[in-house]
Length: 298
Image 1 (tube, rainbow, N blue to C red):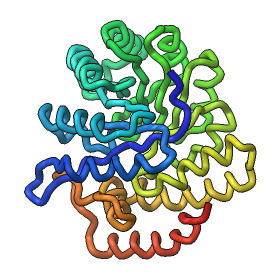
Image 2 (cartoon, rainbow, N blue to C red; image 1 turned 30 degrees about the vertical axis):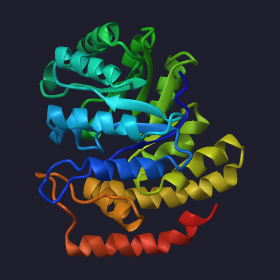
Image 3 (cartoon, rainbow, N blue to C red; image 1 turned 60 degrees about the vertical axis):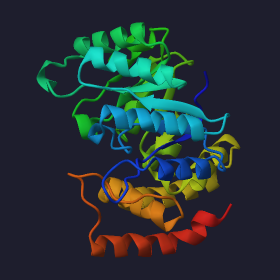
Image 4 (spheres, one colour; image 1 turned 30 degrees about the horizontal axis):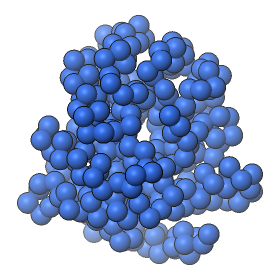
């Protein structure tokens, strides 16, 4: 299964009463269907998955599956602290018709999670998962990074098809590329590292930035594929600035506010995360206004 291209890391919209708003999620997915995104990731970090109940997760999985265009590939976040719960979540994703699962590293008992422990965990999950597994390394949230040695060992498993590396470490991506077979698919999760990572072998990206700027994230991928490297570098520079403010500095609240400005339904994050305060809103809105001409150009 080919996961090349750009995927959006879907946000989870919340209603005024704090509940998950499935109609707003459907609205967003239907708008994304009109873009050239390769597919969608439900229940990822940008989707505030760690703040959701099991019932809410099921509702999101069902809504995304029902709303997505047939040609879009679907991944579901399935990582949990225990191996057993992770396996259970992979089976739920398979029941809902997802193409693959994205499995982050467990992290709570960090001192115990030596490389051999993580390798055993992922192998057990891959053994039991009815659908392909994509590893997920996001050390800025978990404090644990999957290195090239562990990834190479896991790439030998027939049901582990790739990795989403959100570290932003291009050298680390290069080491994973060098250590794994050509069929192993590497996607990056940092918008600032998309172009350099693709030059060394990454297949594409899963991006929070694509929630608000899907067309331009896709355009970067397409410019690279077409060999228009100067234009790709220019666009990468624009997306670096956008990602730095919207994602790195302002987080999920920033992504959601930018979505609101561009006709999607972002809303506010779920507590304990807080919405942007007035000055942050103003700063991001003004930035988007300066970005808009570049965003809308083909």
